[in-house]
Length: 522
Image (cartoon, rainbow, N blue to C red; front, side, top):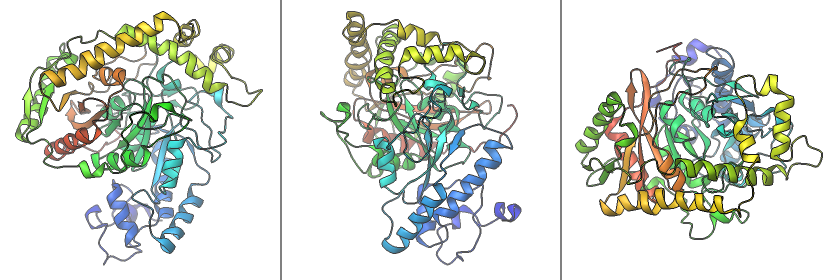
């Protein structure tokens, strides 16, 4: 295919026009939404096989060569074959739904049964091929999605060292931010966020324990939605914490995130967190509302960026947009015990990581090189030149030193987390201020990648919703000194419909996303 012709082909706006010839070329640079893709499929202007090949070509050109983003770890060897099968099925029987034939990338801690490894970015798990799909992957596949490949991540979902570099893994190296290649992609869903931002796919799946969806989404200028814990099955996902872990959608629009959430959400008999009291829905698109901010009461959580006058000024511009769109803003509306659960959260994560990772690794085949946290620590020590050339594994050792989940220290820490961030935190502020949601900047801008000192965090608001297990969505709010920053909306358990309504209203009012330009620096 002539690439110049490919890039100069017809515009995205004409993509769905049925009068256009089916042979017309699709511009490789076009950022296609799920609606664009479905419209093009419906008039035979595009096939799944062709779209899959387009993304594969782009991954090769931009991710593997060109700027070399290192966002994609592994390509599904059956992707094109699967796309062809789905094309024939569409022709014979029509589409299964909005994901039929759509190539999707998954974070490399989600198991798939199609000859791709699941490694959490670690060389210790190289050679681990899951015998079946994780339920969330099975749901995507049943909806007709093409599992295109696995994305790079902060190794072990960034639970290995306090001096890690986000987006680095022993298996995949350092993922880079497509807005400025010397800047962090944040993490731990680094590759998924970068892949969506750089148009290596339309949508991707990330996972979060605390900030691992919303922070890289914010820093890479996309939408990220961390659902209520238990809305999406955690079976077959390499764990950190059963209290806080969840997968979630990463997309360029709120609508696409809502589509993906509706497919991924659902019960799993092997995950008790998805059963009791869970409010599943299959259609979150119906909550989209371009006028969704009108009349909403939103509380501004100011204290997350209290020490940064420039970021508070940026937040003020977002608040002005909210007000122009009809929102009633309560400012400030901070958590009464802001930051009070940090130490307790770390204690919970150390205990649960040991218990949950040991249970996960024990499922691996007898004789596999790592079948416990202790095995993993020994592996890293033995392969230090590859695995620990940038940072240590002190969090793994701290977790290994913990006892069981029946210890009083664990139970007390978990109680503190729920009381300070749940009932006495988000719930209390929403109730007392009569709010629909809380808002704040999701994060600061991307910091410089520093392989010596590790991450230099610029702040973020992810912890309260993460600790409480509540949903959190971030939407692009614009560029701060040339780098993306998102605006967050978070509220109580199972408030995804309300958050999607608010986020879509802000997205429409702000229209703030700018595509990356792969600059070497800002």
